[in-house]
Amino acid sequence: MTNINLTDLSELQAINKKLVSGYHISEQDTTLWQQLDQKIDAYQALFTALGHDLIHDARGFYYLGSDESTPNMGKISRAIALTIYILIEHYANQGKDPLRALFDNIADLELMQTLVQMNKHLFDQLEIFSGSELRKDVYLRMVRLGLAKEVEQGFVLLAPVYRYIDALMEVNDNNFDELEEEV
Amino acid sequence: MIPAKKVLNTLTEHWSVIELLFKRFKMTDFSIKDVQNIIKNKNPHWKSDKIFKETNKLLNQEIIIPLAKSSQLEINRAIADFISFLLQEEDLGIAAEITVLVTDLERLGNRLAQSGEDGDFTELRRFSRIMDERVRKIVKLFSHNENAIFNIVEQAKSDTSHVSLQKRYKAVIEAFDEYIEPMLEMVDIRGDFHRCFNRIEVQISAQIEHIELFGRGSIDKRMLEQLRTRILDMHLVGRESLRKSADMLMPLREELRRNNLITRQASKVLGLIRKNGVDRTLSAVQPEFVSDIQRFSLGQQRHMVAYMASLVEFEHDEYELPDQTDVPAYQSPNIPDYNNVRTTFAKTGQKRTAILGFLSEQYPDLEADEMLFLYQKLINDTDLELQQDEQRTSVSISGQTFKLYPFNAANKQEQKNDKH
Image 1: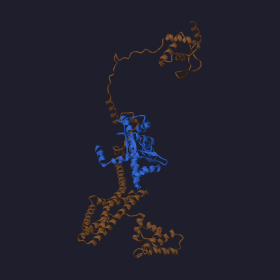
Image 2: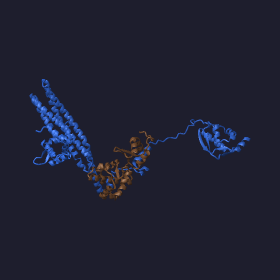
Image 3: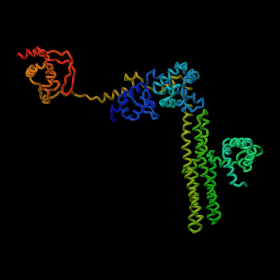
Image 4: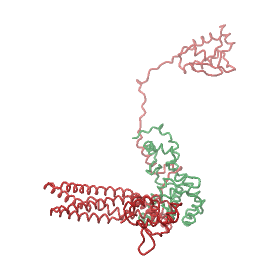
């Protein structure tokens, strides 16, 4: 059993506040990240006792795992997933290295408009009809979840986006066939 | 034949020109005009007849040679190899090159053994020399290819232009599939090279023993020993070089493979989404987040588990009533008799002291609650007439200073008390 010394966990309040709202703490949140990095055992024990599942991803971020989310959160998550997959395809079509471009390139409003225009029928399903709606409904929410950060010209994606790339690799014909059978 | 020193001098003299020619027209031909332009460019103050003379010098010394049946020129292949060695701009050779040399080495080893058996020492020496030559050549090829792979990797990495990934890494993939993999197979501990080298080693060792036995030709012996060492060393160098090359190429290859996989998967998933709709395709796999609402509910399974876990750990404690014998003996408070206090207070009345001051002076050992008890009693005593001060004064009790409106014994009362 890990000994939890609450006085050591000086950032507990800030960390808890961020994590329970679904935020991903990555290296850009220097203070919180360092604290988690150093005291991960204590934090993990504490959050487990509280009924949370504090997950440390080796690619450099921490978040609270969850089996299911509220319908609203689910919808947001799907919108983010769709945007990221479309971005990957977009960069690959341009002949860029998709993974590198995904994290290096800055997404500005112009890019968002292009994405929405080129994938109109996909974004229609999510009720996103313009670049500025994409910005508001997806990118700003990504910032709130710690998946992206806002910079001068637009948005830059952060390491927690790897969760979506993992999810992408999980989709395969088999599990989709099963889904179809159920329906 | 052109004297070597002359060629070297020309190379030193015109190195900048030759380097530029090599870099610009690596594998292609060029005209005499190009050469003259470059010379002019590098030596702007030269007159045209001097430039003409120098160009002719390059041609005469066969540093640049005319292409067959054409007025175009090219760099002499031998010179080009030398330049590429100097500049370390080598191109990757093919695995077969090395394989052929090794096979030849095996053949020469057999011949060497044969001539040893026949006792023909001239032949023995000759073959040993040729083998030595071959081994050096193989080692050179290994290091040459290692350099070439290093260049390939550097180029692939530094190229941030918008060339597609596929094109950028084409050389990497080629190098891997056509050089590294077959070579690794050969060099492998159970591979062809190993077997071949083993056999040669055994043959040479036998020869050395033979020479020792008959006690002749220490020079031959040393030569053979050197050859044996060189072959063993070559095997090691080859393995090292290949491992290094593979280490350099592997990450790039992995990266490419991964990127390809991700791109392909993204297109596939987007295709599925187009066909089946966003919600149906992604619901099963999307990452989930905790949200504020869930914080206040026991909605999730893990919350329930944690809650149940705390229930499991709950232990019912009987509340133990104290035993009669256990009751600690009653300790009466250390309060002086009130009547005594009252009379003492009445006596000091003339000085018109504050009650608090009086109490702390008279009974410095009293506990706070006990003092408060006396204070309360004195204030509520109807016989004593007390009044609260109009202005604030500071009172110090046991080292602490307070500011308050103290209760004082009224003057009138004091006089009355005096009469008593």
